[in-house]
Length: 382
Image (tube, rainbow, N blue to C red; front, side, top):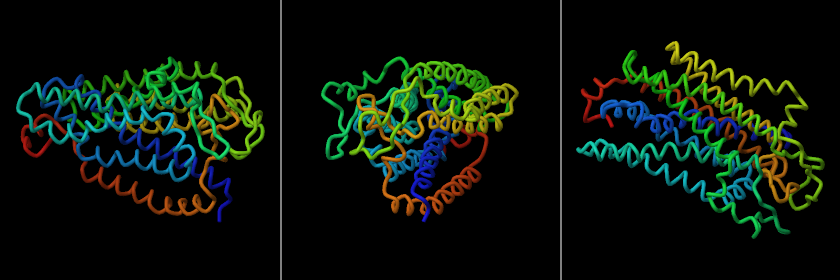
């Protein structure tokens, strides 16, 4: 059996991979639907945008379930505490996502243009809200959530900090900036995907390429702003590792910023620099019409951004702003040794199967779409 600490680290990496997978795959769905009302100039072009994601959008949402399921199984305390503190934000994400299956299935059944446009804005809502709220939530984690644990290990948000349940209170300046960065990341995924999946030389592909180039550069600019701001936000450092119920004030100390891990091992700065370079490559590739490389660079850039975020927090997963010594880390909030061990072998078997099936599905359903395809298959396509 693998060492407990090794398994805890492995599951930290796997959760990063699964959450990044959600942004990479479902990200281009969300990005494309958000861009649709602006990038498409006619009903046929809007149908082209929708049908580029039609074969994949429902399967791509499985990545969200995988990520949430992995957190529930590997970090039950994190799952319970984060869902109670960010409950309204998560409900808003789910409510927005409800518009997608309804809109995708029924849009083409409306005869009037105004009704279709209404559905398009519903699909826009289903894209822009999750993209923003996810970033806002990640930003609030860096600021710390005001939770603590009682004497029997139940997490709660104190009476003087119940503002956390009010969604509007989560919209502080730093978290909003993180939300903007998140939205730009999703939009870049959507734009690079549309440039890759639409007919070469078509108007919609040209617009997508221009947007992808600009959005990729904006990711770098806003990402740098977030990084600079983060340098002035207090981070935490473990002095004495202990279980939640045994934690004492002083076990965790407040540090100058969340850059402690990078300062201890400067080689880690390669990760955020790589993220910036990947988005610069995506911008350049989009401008030159190398859409496959642009989408690849953007996708790997997502993973680099998630890794940058995770390294900043490590080993913290959910910091507490009111009781820092009771913050949740990958050491004190994981499931048992046996649970992680069994899940590890399950993941070894099934994650590759999911990846292979996903690759096969994309290969079999791959094609570039044009308005002509929509006209010739009007009753078969969305």
